[in-house]
Figure 1 (tube, each protein chain N blue to C red):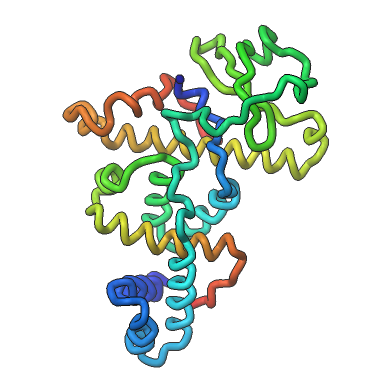
Figure 2 (figure 1 turned 60 degrees about the vertical axis):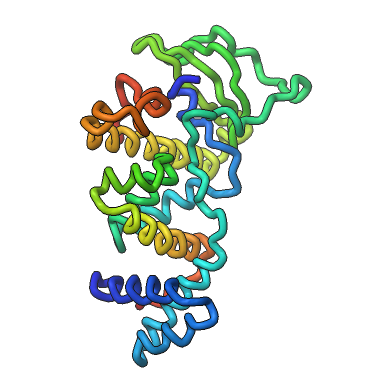
Amino acid sequence: MERERWGQVERVFHAALQVEESRRGELVRRSCAGDEDLRREVESLLAHHQNAGDFIETPAFDGEANTAGVRAIPAAANPRPDLKGALVAHYRILDEIGIGGMGVVYKAEDTKLSRTVALKFLPDHLAKDSAAVERFRREARAALRSIIQTFAQFTTSRSTRVASSSPWSTSRARLWPAALPGER
Amino acid sequence: MLFDEALMVARETSTDLVAVDDALNRLAKVDERKSQVVEMRFFGGLSVEETAEVLKVSPETVMRDWKLAKAWLLRELSGEKPNGA
């Protein structure tokens, strides 16, 4: 979409949100002045705005209560070999944290950087499924986006963070590792 | 709880993270700043004020961006075609 067009969409969209719902249709019609494409685009976005509810309102990754959503693993449903103590690449498996969306998450020690990491493994039965593998790879990229984003924000706001005790100080400080995975 | 443990442990959510990530890449082509607002708030967990500070815009602008971006992303995820305006 051209920048100018998008600007028009944006202006009418926000103007419509300024008035009562019952008057929005009329306002949009008037603002679009016969431009039917523009009217349809704005009305479509307004309709989705009405239905948006809690959509993406809760952050995807919560660094402070990050195991809250991980289901406990019932012992009976746990036929996996005990990996505790095993070395995978240069990661030593410490403990099983839980089952994420599509795999098992272990707490592990990065023996090169002496830090704790989470390792997520794709279950065996999915490892042969190329769609599942692809999804797994993309999920990792989505997680990586969060980390890179947070790091970028940190470097931008370093002075702010040092200067004030909130909101940057304690809780988020733990979010920054000494070394970040580089995006390929 | 250390940072790194959060790395791959997403909160149980009905939102398809991969789909949001993909849609966000498309939004970046339409409006870079709105995609950044969503990235910081949804993937980065920043508040409105924090996001405003990083992007050097007002919190009101962040909220406006956020509202439109949410509607746009929700439409993308619903599979409905934008009308190409």
